[in-house]
Length: 296
Image (cartoon, rainbow, N blue to C red; front, side, top):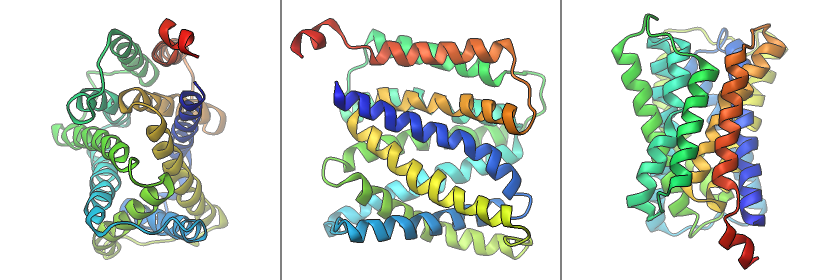
């Protein structure tokens, strides 16, 4: 029970932090182009995590596992987040949020063949309620103008994030959360470098235009990346991948609340209903079964 609880807390905090990322990055990206910001994000996070990893003496890995950790950095932090950037640019914001937060669907489906996790009625019910809640929180406008290319990139982002969750679970059998997160972020920084360099040839980078820009960049790198990715990977280590992925549904809820508080955006009754459905789904899937209670 304690393991499940700590996993739920870690994943809830990570998804909540990523909810705040929308508000901060919305401001910073007026001064720093997206892939350059992504590169800075990984450089800052990688430096912080690397120092902690060395201090904790958790830097040693087997050479044969470099490929696995590099794959996590590539598929999860480079391809998934990069595709999310491109998809959001080509599509509208609501479609972007709706498709990318559908990754729990793919995680639940992939966890069965790749991790041999069970797919029971509780998971399916929780998945249905959470996805329905996301639609209500974000909204759905079938008449909005969006390109099929944007939706395709967003779908790639959702699927590759599901693969990230699966392979983090696999790597956690051999290494600590700190080791996995650090190496994956450093690999992601390497993969992002050529894209950022190319982007900087066409866009002006005004990182020091004001204190809010560089402070926001530090927040994105340290809190939204180093801390949040560590918490997410830790939570995925403590829980089934299919169950843990559902906590991603917190992200649009927190983002909407912060948008209401700081950007004067409106919260509707559908938001409240959707948030309630998401919470209900998480309670259902994490509520201890009768046999678990008897065994404790």
